[in-house]
Image 1 (cartoon, rainbow, N blue to C red):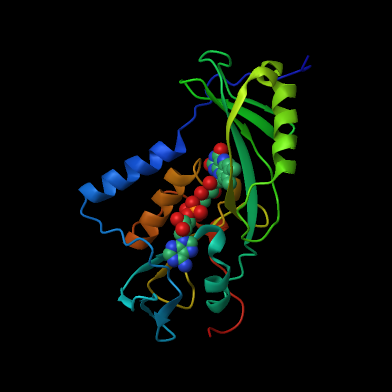
Image 2: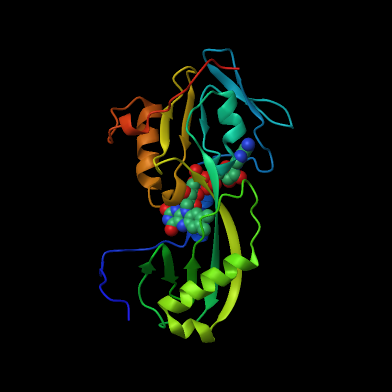
Length: 234
Ligand SMILES: Cc1cc2nc3c(=O)[nH]c(=O)nc-3n(C[C@H](O)[C@H](O)[C@H](O)COP(=O)(O)OP(=O)(O)OC[C@H]3O[C@@H](n4cnc5c(N)ncnc54)[C@H](O)[C@@H]3O)c2cc1C
């Protein structure tokens, strides 16, 4: 028995790997060049304006830079004196290979949840762990996730776990992202700290950032997301 529950018929879901594939295709169609395996190691600036990015394969000149480096942002933010309080928060999940129709809706209880996909896959999530940038999975997390999943749906005791994986969330103190221009460096924008809701909030975050970058009146009040700095740039 689960006692009292809320039924939210309007809740939807997206398959995040497919969303990313679609985004790549859309960007390619727009002629956007994607440079992979080219980590940004620092930003180029003259103390007032951003001039581009440093990479191991050489500098990239740019008048406008958007920093959206997720859980790995720490070293770059420290050099830019951004006070976002960002911490990587590891999340582990399981995927069960169930028969399609075993579960019809997302179920959430006590921070644990099940997400059924149309093809029968059921995702069970997720852990919240402060383990730095360590992205490995652990047997302990698997056990905890299996027990929680079976409490939510006992039939999963008979169901094969197909996969376990881990990801790093860009954790921010209250889960509120910082979106906007760097107050001391013209041309540098940030979009960081989306913590547990980066997919859910992506359309709104992108709309706000797009407005700010283009100089349009923002459709969302930007003040709660303002980028704050402390001290002088290094
Ligand atoms: C287990 C788990 C479950 C989740 N479930 C949900 C959910 O149900 N709904 C939801 O909305 N959100 C969910 N999230 C959170 C969501 O994944 C994040 O909020 C979101 O991915 C943050 O987006 P981002 O673009 O800021 O960072 P990321 O998606 O982490 O992207 C950052 C990118 O920057 C790249 N990068 C980092 N450093 C550099 C560098 N120096 N140079 C160049 N590139 C760099 C990285 O390789 C990466 O591709 C979940 C996260 C986890 C781990």
